[in-house]
Length: 366
Image 1 (cartoon, helix red, strand yellow):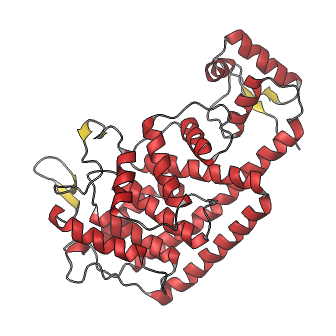
Image 2 (spheres, rainbow, N blue to C red):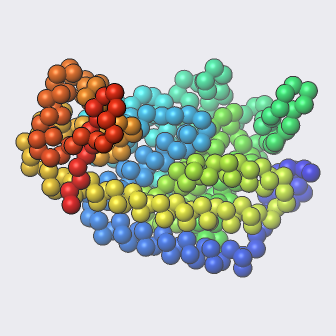
Image 3 (cartoon, rainbow, N blue to C red):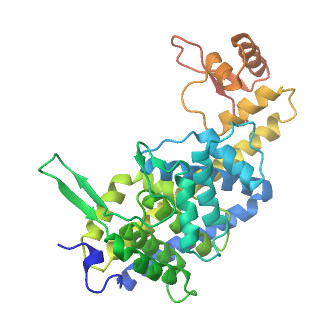
């Protein structure tokens, strides 16, 4: 069976609108409710919710590609670029800065036209050294070679996907950009985000980074759909949670017909789950705000405030005095005194379970 970009009428996608209407209506209702909850938070908490959602988006979009970024550096880079308090987090490296710059350009400037030059800039930001791992990448231009996704041992390879030939890319991308920038018509912006994601990743115009850029393009159109640069949910985080389904459905769709109803159905359902998951993000933002309302006037030193902020952002694993010393860049004795002070104030308590080393956990206000 040919790939969809080899079909005679490519890229004239079709879908069963009547089948999608109930799903689209439900997702649009969920988005509206979430935006209403964000508006009710007030500016400071709204900024915090946006920061958390964007941090998740950067982390999870890279994780889908098998790259684990340092969460604190991502948050620090986003906070700095958004003019928010970074909480003493470490400076980000060029790699993190580039990924953050791409996502913010897509979402904060969602109304701006998409051009080849803008895409080239995003690609250059993703690969500031001109390399992807051990391999050189053609940065800031359409790829000049073929591209296949292959698995299996030598001699028994299976081709999962083959992108259009390089010589077709200028014309294919010109067509895609004209469609992307066309004035709003009857196509809902949420559906347009789903189509753009599939269309771009099928063209696969770059050597590497196509998945991340496709998800950034979807985020740009979802921001247009919301009519706001405020981000209350992370589509990439939900795609990462459903990664196996995501890749399997992409492969089936790219080997199927130009009727992409199954892809659009999954995208809408995935988006709905992402918006539902945003409730946890808002809960975390409100819990953090209540924590500081309760403890903000306590006599805490700078290290304690910074480390508590990091704990409130979601600390993985057990908090021990040695981890505190490492994160705060202080001696073990100083870390012990910091922790004892927080125990005395009722901000920390001994974690249950014991074990080889004593660990601690936050005490949340009632």
